[in-house]
Length: 193
Image (cartoon, helix red, strand yellow):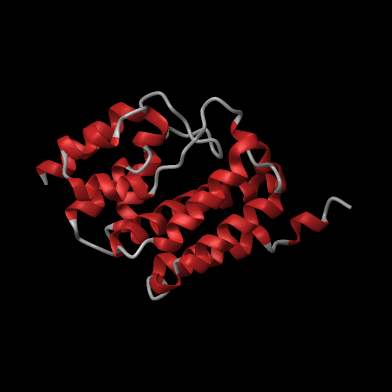
């Protein structure tokens, strides 16, 4: 567990002061939830460490080389599977679609089950947060995101589900599928006529 504690310390430090776009809650709650969800699908310590660290390269400028040095090459590989090229020189709203296309293309090529478990856990955590806010304010939830078009968000989450069908026996997959259906197939979008 020493490795997990080290991953927790790094995640807490890396995300200190950050909040979630969807709910304005402390960001660290997200990677902790991702690790908790993943722990219901695997007891592989490297996978659980990578679940905690899945956003540190993308959001906190920690390098994959640092993760490999401090943990191991497998943890670094798992984190890299979750790391988008954010194109920090351009506005996030302009790069959203290309980043998601690249991520989905990468996901389609992933054969490692641990990497797919982290993907599933991450997207489930995201959808739990989105669904909770959606239940309160409906489609106004999309105003909190770089991509405000609900149909684009639907495309992305449905594509993720389609790329993770090999994990469909897990309750986490079924919950993600249910939340995607709830958020994107609700009558809310018709109430604004």
